[in-house]
Image 1 (cartoon, rainbow over the protein chains, first blue to last red):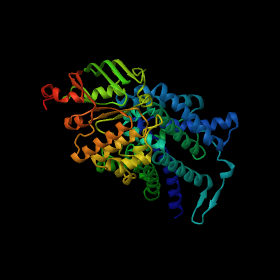
Image 2 (tube, rainbow over the protein chains, first blue to last red):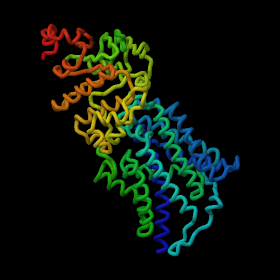
Image 3 (cartoon, rainbow over the protein chains, first blue to last red):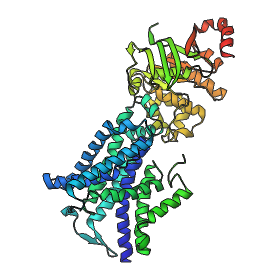
Image 4 (tube, one colour):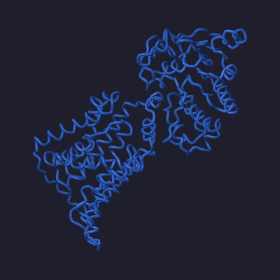
Length: 287
Length: 233
């Protein structure tokens, strides 16, 4: 029983990261039609910026939770404006290749500077320790990760589904030329969207820093799974990406209890089945 | 009458294909103009080139005295030009009201939401439905209504009556008359000749990417033999 709840919690934690990351990927893909392979690198950058802020500027976790995503988001905006935006009129493959190259460059640079081994990042004192729930022991920080990532996902969903800015985003996803003819600065909207996606990835990275270690390769390991999540959820579906992230995290956790050998592949098995039965994904609209 | 839109020697291209071959036209403030012509002569392209959706263009477009050739697409509406595309462009992922509120207000003098709902009661009833759940006629009303909110001076309308039932076509005609009373300038592309003849002040006849004739509605009876020849109506 202990093991079941323990693995469920780990599944929920992993699911939180899957959800945050696949959400950003889905937002970017929906509007820019770019498969952002740099997403894992942006997640890693978030963790590293938090680590460097603490190391060199004495800026702690709470401030880093805001500052790191802003820095990575701005960096994303610069990349979109100066480089990525030049590729929109070409085959989508160019965007994919560009972001893939970008990811390799960023990760290679950090591996050169900091080595492949991870750096520890302590959870904030307020959230250290744990709580005994009776049926299981809950580390406080992990409980915080689950709650705050759920809030971030819901906040992003509300932004896109319920605000004026969100209506521009949804409309521009359907027909960017017409939205621009209505007087909306769509190129700026694209920049904002890429920055938002990169910022979300960095936010997940800061959250992950105390759970995993801060390492140049932390994104590489995660991003493949996250792509599987996006495929299962359905490309471009916001709520689909969030729900699928949590579902697959939990499915992975449960597999660790009942058949640990399969836990590394269960997500990909689910992906294969979904692709066979519903090629557009669980929440995707048929193209 | 003070000219609002002046187009001179306008050429445009879809990639390799040269569609407009020197279009000349003038639209006065408050005028309702209809462009007639057979399928594929460049009527829709004329509208899309004036709006700036088609960027491969040469020639002159003056709107309200301002040179529009270098103006980026997202600034065209702010200059005062509103566009309703042929396919209507209603967004499926937006509710009726979100569709209505989507185009930014560019100037004073547009209709308020209440006025719009008064003019189009169907839209008020369905304000929370997804935009594409509306009937074709309602979608056309919505496509026009959302531009009326923005306060643009001129409306470019691409085949508003296409595929709609006669009773809806009549309704669109009434709406256009109301707009005219409010001083809106309208440039209309229309295949429905009977419809156009009832509302337009003046006609341009288009053939092979050029304007080949231009006459006011009063001369329509005299022009009929020529129209029969060019349009095949």
